[in-house]
Image 1 (cartoon, each protein chain N blue to C red):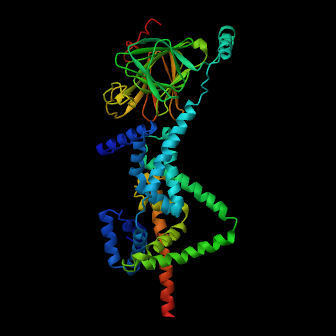
Image 2 (cartoon, each protein chain N blue to C red; image 1 turned 30 degrees about the vertical axis):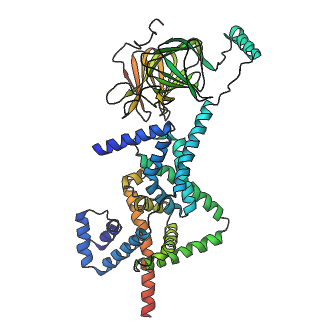
Image 3 (cartoon, each protein chain N blue to C red; image 1 turned 45 degrees about the vertical axis):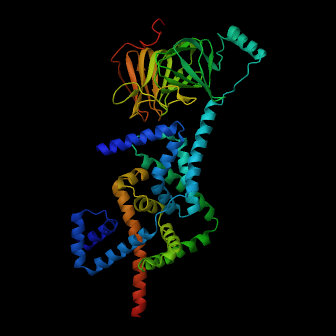
Length: 208
Length: 309
């Protein structure tokens, strides 16, 4: 282990010890240290901003409740992202159960996602001065990510939006690094494939 | 490389995770292969779109709400831990308790709600959780479940519960979680447990490492991993003055149980269990992983007046 890592591990432990004593300054420090990757991971994983903020808060509550379960072999970031991931998966499962009561609606929704993504890709190639539509783009990116399987989406989002290393994602997903890489690359290919299909269709339309 | 091999590497290239050498190989292939070039562009565009959405931040209110929620949960958990009945001992209850201790005691073990301060050398302070105030400890008084006790430099306190004894060394801080459960926050203590009492005394630290002593004499301390010296936990303050001196910066600390007589059971945070017998010492790492080894120095608790027991 590099000297720098050793120092950061000790700082993590020190911070958690202060949290265990109920030190509010330590809670704030912990939230501020991890809020960026965490909120971006949860938001892109569950796709609903209000839910993401609730899950964000619940993650830190869960941290206080389970401080004794932290293993120093894992990094603080890995541990907290695992908690956030488990809470997010629970929420997604509950949402899916709720949805399955209307199967037809779910089927038509997944078709809708495919159409949305080609729009996203088109919008992405347009000049950046169209910033006014960023919220609309955001909604469409969310829809596109929502079309991926949860396991691929989770790996992709942890890498791209939380900025985690492959080895950290491997710990969170309890899978070999190679599998994690494969999931991320598959996710990107899935999304790019939609563009390819769309390109083929439009070139056929132009030719005919 | 074949087109299939090249395409496998395109997502990694788009993410910027591909090393220089394979990246150059892909670039060379793509320059002369229109199909792979189109595939590279598609993948690059998809990654570009995913990157185009701005990074999110939690709202200020949410950040504060999260911090407040953490503090509330901590308070609730502490309260649950300390929520033992605080009886105002009405005379009839005292009479009933006396009856139980005197008559039924040998047959039925009764649980008291306090430890008695059997002896006090120097000065110690007690935080009464019900009122939230600090006061000096006096010999002969009771330390109740929920109280925090802090000893000053040069102080040794002896606590008694039935046949059991607990000695607190100087600059030690404990919480009385239960009559037979002490949470050690800093410093060192020594326990002598009568095996005939049939109930173990438990000493824990904040990482949920637990030392159970069902009989014998065991010294339990929190030690600095690097220097080996004693370390502190939290700093208490009273009316603006520190009740105990500010501690050195803790790098990493270990709970160490040194067994003089009898046996100690070590329970890690993940319920790993080990036993340390007389002449051995048990050590927990921060995460609660226990290990045992021979005791280097047999002198246990020279700081306490415990040698005569």
